Length: 312
Image (tube, rainbow, N blue to C red):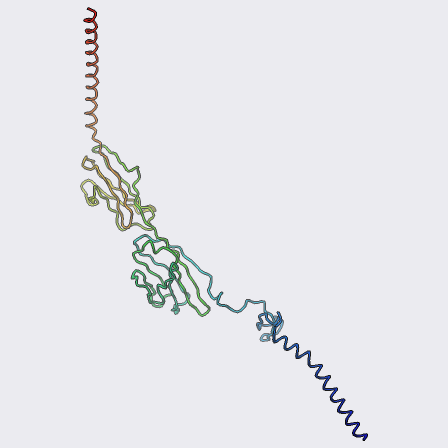
């Protein structure tokens, strides 16, 4: 009987001990469930393994790093570099792009106006035969060549270089200009017979000297008329063509036009003044004045006679 009571008491004590242990484990389980459901702010912060500044080489500590975060797609593209190039209408232009290593093959040219891929590697992806890429074997240069430049070619072109660390972009801004010929003056040029005709033609907005500059007299080219006319071209900072015609004649009068390659032309009208004709006009004007004086005197005499007859 006494043994039965002792066993019963030990069972109750064991049950009570199990209840106490269970109550002690409940807060930890609840905390674990809360962390699983909604991580704390610290648990959501990025964590990297960084070398401890105070530890020996090779020691690593886990914590919140102050170094830059790991690369993301937004920062895989390096800072852009750019060039500005001016091309003349109808000429050829070369847009440069240089890589760091000659083995890089993932180089593409894109036209930003319509995001059209023009070239990728050494292949061309446009039906326009004016576009091509120049890449000598083993070179680090990937040059986009455009022949017979048109006004619509103006804009921004993007050279994309794919590397293991991301994509580098080089921009080229292309400006297309139309050169024009300018002949100083108000559109007229006056010269006396026997004098020298000297006309200057300047080529404006031209990145380089045009391939040719022709002079026309009433639609006839006169560059090679060596008997009295000469053409001199100055390719200094400002391109100039000078036409000289010696011993001007009346047949030299008319329209003169300066026309250069891929350039809007300019024209001027030349007037030849004959000095002897002006001198011949002056005596006739004097004779007319004398005749007028004689007529006035005659009319005065006639009026006097009429007045005298009336009085008589």
